[in-house]
Structures are given as structure tokens and as C-alpha cells.
Amino acid sequence: MGHNTIEVQPLTSCIGAEIAGVDLSKTLSDEQFQDVHDALVDNHVVFFRNQEITPEGQLEFARRFGTPEVHPIVEGSNAHPELIEVLKPAGEGASFGTGWHTDNTFFEKPTIITMLYGIDIPPVGGDTLWASMEAAYDALSDGMKELLDGLVAVHSASVAFDPRHTRDKYEGKHSLKYKYSEAVEVEVEHPLIRTHEISGRKSIFVNPMFTLRIKGMTDAESAPLLKYLYEFSTKPEFFCRFRWQEKSVAMWDNRCTQHYAMNDYVQYRRFMRRVTIGGDTRPV
Ligand code: SIN
Image 1 (tube, rainbow, N blue to C red):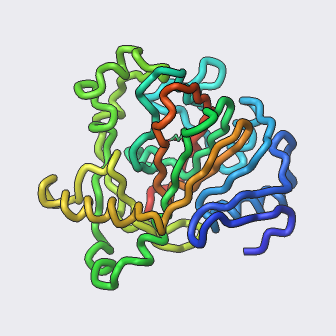
Image 2: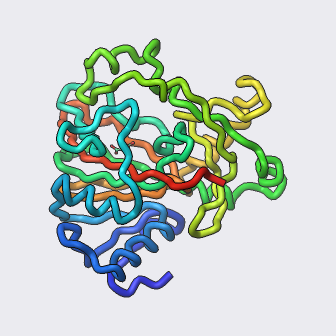
């Protein structure tokens, strides 16, 4: 797709692009917004540098893509419950988002887009990686595509947010605050191969944080196939890595990506502001 009002510089041949020529502190024209939206769908994750964004401005921009979500388990900020302050002070070990995942696939209508704003960035470390589940799907053999097409996967937050395994999260020992809710236990089903509602392209839609099993199989039967897909789909050929700076923004499309927050900066503080945007429809 052409982008007339912005500059789009791809980072790799399959995922990630830096966008220049946009000031997110101002309301974008409809044309410029459409160009940003198209660039996001084309590149799966887009980055902006040197943006001054207030909490209200971040929510206003997010609303142009859909409805900002209030997370049922991770507490949002007091003033804006849709905004999660992803804070890791110097010395804290636990890191939010470390481990390959797609945001909130345990929702019936999973998050479509996430917007993350960098406020305090460590001098070294704290990068984020994104992998293209579309490039990974395209690279599968025809036989594997046939095997996977039509399968359904079961997703839940019950492992990642299980209070029995992650009690310290709920006991307030991390800077991020967690609240137990029934959402932790719910199991939902999504197609294992998802078709993007805008691009019409297929991608692998399972992730090791929230996918429990393949429907109709036991956990043990599902595990080897899922493990293969997790390893295959996060090969370096399918990912890009972003070096954050203060005032950088990343926006990613959860319909066709996984991401991984590096936990390699324990001696430094990192502070980000995150909003997720809900999907209107169930994945197909
Ligand atoms: C996330 O998984 O949403 C957080 C990513 C990050 O902090 O880099």
C-alpha cells in the first residue's frame, strides 16, 4: 500500500517499520491516520521516535483504532484504568511480557493492537522483539499448512496468571499490581490458523504464554506440535528487534505477531505506558 503523508522505513523484509513525519501530540488528519493504519497492517509493528504523548493523548490516539481495554487481571493507572504503567524499578527481577506471547489471546475477542510508549529507558538492555506469525505461516510446508488448517486451539490465562504459581504477583511484591478475577480461569477457543480481517492473510495464532492445547487432543498430545510451532515461528528470520529510546512508541498488530520483552537490565529502571485495543469480532 502507498503511504502519501508519512515516511515508512522497513526494518526487515517481513516485520517492523519506522515511521517518520508524524507528530502524535497533534490530532492526525484522516488521511495521515489511514496511512499509519495501513503501515501497521503491512508491517505488523511500527515505531515512532521522539513523540510527546500525554496519557490522555495516548488514549485519544488509541481510540482511533478501536476501543481501549481495561485489563481484567493487571491493574491500570488510577486516573486511566485502560493505561497500564509497565514499571520495573532498578533491582526488581520480575519483568512483564518476558516470554513470547500475543497480547490477551485468552479473551473471547482478543486484543487487536497494542501501543507502548517509552518513558524511562535503560541505557542498555530492555529491547523488545516481535515475530511475524504471517511470515512463519508462509514458510510452512503445504503438508503442515493442510494439517493445521481447521484446527482449533484452547487459550487461557490460567498458567501465566495462576495465583498458585505466581503468588508474589498477587501479593503486591511487583511494581505492577495484579488482581485475581474469574478471567484467569476461563478457557476460550480460537482457530489455530487465523485470517487477518483486513489483509486477508493467514498466520499462526498460538503462543506459549496463553495457549493450553489443541482442541480435541490432550495436553500431552498437543505439546509436541505446539512446541514445534513456537520454535519455528520465532526463528530470527521472522523477527525484528527494537532498541527503545525515551519518547519512542511501538504499535503492534496482535492478529499476526508475537512479542518478547527482554529482561536484561536488572540494574536499571524501565518505565513504559501501555494500552491495548479490543477486537470487535472473534478471530476466524
Ligand atoms: C508487553 O508484553 O506488552 C510489554 C512489552 C515490553 O515492555 O517491551
